[in-house]
Image (cartoon, rainbow, N blue to C red):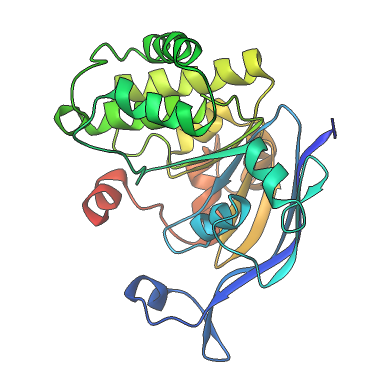
Length: 272
């Protein structure tokens, strides 16, 4: 298989919308430019982080990669397959997990995942065994409790479990631990690392959490106003500013390069 999991070249996406959340973004020709001339490559087996404040374009970018939006410009290749020409093939290779994962809230984790497994064409016995393994690994014991009675953290873990049913090779995690308590967050992070080891998965991760990016990502891109303004290993990014800031954290790098503070999780949770 292709050694590059993801090849993004000069991708752009604008919206001609008056949505309130778009008003924060730059306007160009009456349109709002959410992503502007973005290029980057992710190697197979890498965990690649995209960091950016709200309204930076990172969720739009993930939606383009997940085939939910069609870019206005540029091209995206997943394992050498053109996203638009080979959409069917690409859809089998990727899976997206987002904070707003859709579920049947009256059904249990087991029922939700069995439903998803049927969509993937798995037989019942195989699906049940696989679901039990995944849920156990994520520390989810309430297999038969309706999702609406489970905490937000548990629901997010079920969303990640669902993504692994069809063993995707490229996993798109959009803010996967936002709103989770520290223990759930750690379990999800460990699970992501384990999946990369055990399933030869490549992970693209957007996050507000600098420690998470530091802990999980081989390389990190910082996106602001729809453009990637820096890309390197976490240490490489810190080296950029260490003459100005002694012992910098990734958060220091972010603030130095963007002049912005990352929105805190509490703000984000109250927004969603």
